[in-house]
Length: 233
Image 1 (cartoon, helix red, strand yellow):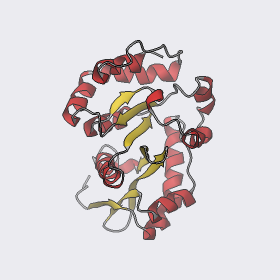
Image 2 (cartoon, rainbow, N blue to C red; image 1 turned 120 degrees about the vertical axis):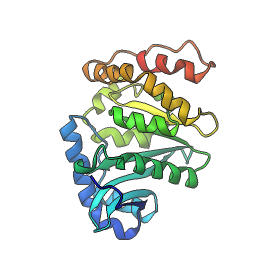
Image 3 (tube, rainbow, N blue to C red; image 1 turned 180 degrees about the vertical axis):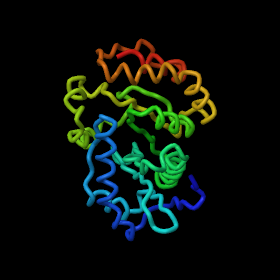
Image 4 (cartoon, rainbow, N blue to C red; image 1 turned 120 degrees about the horizontal axis):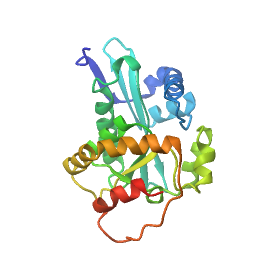
């Protein structure tokens, strides 16, 4: 597939015409994967475009191809790159990775001091995040802003999240901390070395969730404790 003619840029108010198409594809994709998402309305997506807090991928003929947007929480302390979606015909072509890179850069430009985090049920997104410098973390390291968790109410797995006191769910949490992070090549190498284990983890979480154990190491090296965070619930 020819991806050289794809334009990936910051969305503008003129792109609001794609908002309904984007939200429809988000919902359709979630149903096809059998996973839940925090649903967003076309109006919400359009607002992100107006604010310059979204990235869109288009063909040179104007066909919508992919999208992602920025959300802020805890008075800007945390930023999430949310709603990544790519048309099925363009998946595994590098478009998703390019969008994630652009939205990550936009987040760093707009919120240089903020921690950037994401929740995902997909190994492919985990791989992309790892290449950007994200680290797998426990839910306790994410924003505790109630408005963020309120957005999960439309997810089919919301009851599971609440039964775990918002400490675990089917999604895997990943975080980039601008003040305390490893180089992208380090997190990328970690992902590649532990890919099979992470894949088993995702399958395991879809089967059954266990109670999260207390972490005995409150001040140790984060990179050494990543697997502990991932496999102890």
